[in-house]
Image (cartoon, rainbow, N blue to C red; front, side):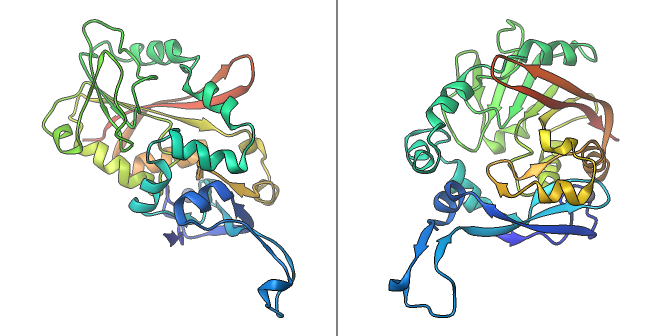
Length: 286
Ligand SMILES: [Zn+2]
């Protein structure tokens, strides 16, 4: 784990910080650091008694307004967090701290309500979707076009779960031996420590004609315009360690040699929540 000294999307070093808590599910699962009650039995005279949690900082980039966790987990640490994602050991630890988690598991294992809208958004710009790669697509539950008879859908995912009927699992090495018409990376970039590093790998898997579709949440807190107020409202960090702004997406793409074709905000209303997501379509710059 490293502590970020610059913005992970635009590279700017002008950051403002505010203290926050790394949620105990993450500190437990990644580091086996569990919350404690410090009492007199600890025999430490120089600190106050009370509850301990893992402290961290919320950082805000003054240039592109990316709001992010200062801790940047390495590959092994993220591997421990996402191993058997939403499986048995994951759920057991998560239930220690979050009582409503079973409900969320059920909710999250359902199909995204806006999948049809994703497909029509992409089809506005290209109808060549013969071979698709879903980068970080899990079991393929939310892979667009998988029910399309003429589309071959490949899924690459670090969690190594089995993929659904109508999709093909692909290894990291094999990715670079194929030609893709479209690469999808949906709800991944908010989880990774170095989004530009991931985009660099995706770039290598693309050719001049390949389209890239990115999707990430527009977190509600990002509606707060005042920088200090925004920072002071972000007091905890969970699995989403990057909260994107429009400018942060634009600069991340420019820095990674992509040409932005469309950046859209989509409301994905369903019964329980009113969420928005960023939809991004891009191509290689050259
Ligand atoms: Zn930035």
